[in-house]
Length: 95
Length: 478
Image (cartoon, rainbow over the protein chains, first blue to last red):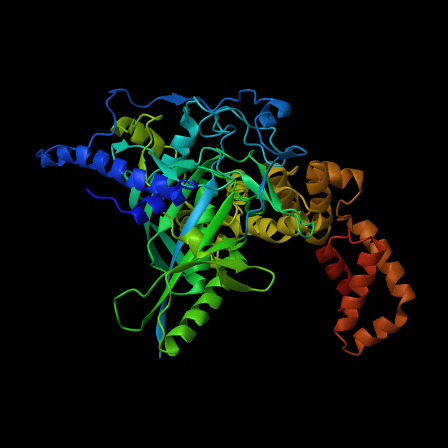
């Protein structure tokens, strides 16, 4: 499967990353070859095979609705690039 | 051109658990920002979500109450999008195997019942809250993640509604069902219950749906209705000009009562759903489903019908009572103690609701108890107090939680039925109102009403009106 530059740009946009022209070229080739490799799976007959998302046989793992302590405000904000008072500060979100 | 308006609703309801969906942080409303968060709901690297069983069961309960089919297998999916209120950059939701599908809800408009189909009911996590500073020119927004990870139920209807009165009934009925099943507190002012509408127009008599417009930012039921009315007119004008309606998302502006298109970048969403690898699927067996079904109480419309049939109440009265489950429960408790449904209905829908409104009382924590209201109705029937005095007693009861007898004793409100005493008062009134007696003898019937009023005034409303009437007639000589 061939991926074109627009596709790369679209994915980059979804991922919120900026790519240089060189990187775009590089990823066109790399992603195309990855997809071609994966495409080999399409040669298998999967007509009667149910889609499987979980390899583990375990199911129904729950916790009870019981309070556990939250973490302290300084710890909450410690990794934030920007804060204001007790809030995380982010670039303006346009309404 | 005549068009038909086609409306569907998407509803989000926060579930009434005390902790979040995937961690033990509190869901309490109105606390200081970012004080109810932990590495899990902040989306720190390496953390693992663990499903809150109660949240899952609440979602099952709602799906059952909305007559959905519940598959044996359900799982969760990642919905990826980048927005500052979403710490993980994806929301754990359901897409491929929704918990409940193909349900319906009956609504009643002007006493005609119609059925609105439910496309699906699913469970997901809430996002954080963005705060936009009011200072002019501020180039930032603030984020509070207390709500991030709160369990959220999403209910998606089919586009089965045609008029705003149906939409209103749908919202009210759904709210009641969620309250009756106790899965959500449905406090709209706290954002526990939110609606999004999708609207399209088509020529009357055709089947093909027109392009659909979604409306967000609807903060009250009133906004939903206003936004739908606005949008129907906007689309009609577009179509009448011979243009086509764009498929888009619009934001409702509550202040100016109009909608505006959302930026196209934000609407062209590509969520890249895939099964959530950090959560295992959930298998629902017959036994578990049965146990959940057993917890569903009698639902509002059914209860209303029973109230009409078993207690001979009017549709209007029954609707008022079932409007709040807590009031309908109160009513039934009263009737169990004393079989006077009409009397209790009147007390609850008139006096009780008025006092609640005037004194801003919380109906979930009323001081007056059903057995006390029953006792009040009983002493009115016995003639211990008149129905006028009873209103005063009731007001005291609802404020203090005292028994009616205690209030009557403390305030000396017992009705005077002592004929000797009443006679003394009547003689006094007659001698000080000779004109009225003359008038009465001349045939002016309302002179008697005046005299009765005077006696009641003298006794501060406590004289037994029947005895007063009888004795007065006797005294003035008929």
